[in-house]
Amino acid sequence: MSTQATSIRRSRDVPTLVAAAREGDHRAVARLVSLVENDDPVLPEVAAALAPHTGSAQVIGLTGSPGVGKSTSTNELVRAFRARGQRVGVLAVDPSSPFTGGAILGDRVRMQDHATDSGVYIRSMSSRGHLGGLAAATPQAVRVLEGAGCDVVLIETVGVGQAEVEIASLADTTLVLLAPGMGDAIQAVKAGILEIADVFVVNKADRDGADATYRDIQGMIGLGERGPGEWRPQVVRSVANRAEGIDDVMAAMDKHREWLTRPLPGGAGAHELTRRREARAAAEVEAIALGALRARIGNLRGGEALPTLAARVAAGKLDPYAAAKELLSTLEV
Image (cartoon, rainbow, N blue to C red; front, side, top):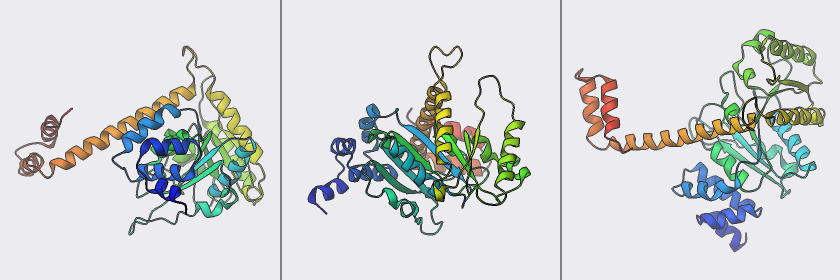
C-alpha cells in the first residue's frame, strides 16, 4: 500500500479527507464513514465540511425478509444506475452478533462485479444492536456518500420482520422485496413493513406461487384509502439472479421520483420530496440532540445529583416525574 493511501486511512484531517472523497478517493470515503461509525469527536467538523455538498442524491431503501434477494437485487440496481452514467454508493447493513458485536458483512462478497468500478462505493455496516433494520450511523453515512459525489445511494437493510420500518424515514423511495412462499394473503395484510413500500418487488418470480403473491399484494393495496393525487404503490416482478425485471423496477422508481417532485397543492412550489427530506433532517437533528442529552445525563451519574434523586425516588420521598424535572433543571440548555 502506498504511503499516501496509508496516510488517508489513518488521517483525521477533515478538510483533506473531504477533498479527497470529493475527488473519488475510496479510501477517504471509507475513513469518513469509519469516523461516523465510531462517533469520533471530529464528527461535527465532518458534518460541517460535507453539508454544502449534500441534499441532491437519490436515496433508495431496499428492505424485506431474509432470503428474498435483497443483495442480488441491489447488485443489479447498481448495474442499471451505472449504465445511466450515475455514481452509486451502497450501504449494506448486516446484523451484528449479540456476543461479540461483530458481523459477517458479507454483502460485498455478493457484489464483486462492481469491486473494480471507481464509480461505485460499497460499504457494509454492522447494525451493532440498533433496531429498525439500520445502523445508528446510517443517516450520517448517507451524508458522507452524498458529499463524496454519489448521485444515488442504495441502502440495504438487515433481514427484517413486521416492525423494522426505519428505512422509510431515511429513503426517498422505499422498495419492499417479497418472494413466493413467504406468507399468505392474511400475512401480507397484517405485516406492518408492507405499509412503508413505495414499490413492491416480487422477486424470484419464476417460482411457483409468484402470481398468487402478486395478486395478494395488489389486493392489499386495493384495501387502502387514498386521496386524489396520493401515491399508489407499484407492484413489479423480477428474477434478480437472472437480471430479469430490473428494467421494470427502475421504471417504477422513476415514476415514483416523478411523483415526488410534483408541486404540492398550495405548497408555494414545494413538493413531496422536499417534505420528506425536511422530515428526515428533523429526525436527524432530534436524534443528535437526544444523544447529547443522554451523554450529559450519563455524566451526572458520576456526580451527586442523579444518585441523590434516585435515592429519594426509591425511598418514596419524590416521584420520578418531579425528579426528572429537577434533573433537567441542572443541565445547561
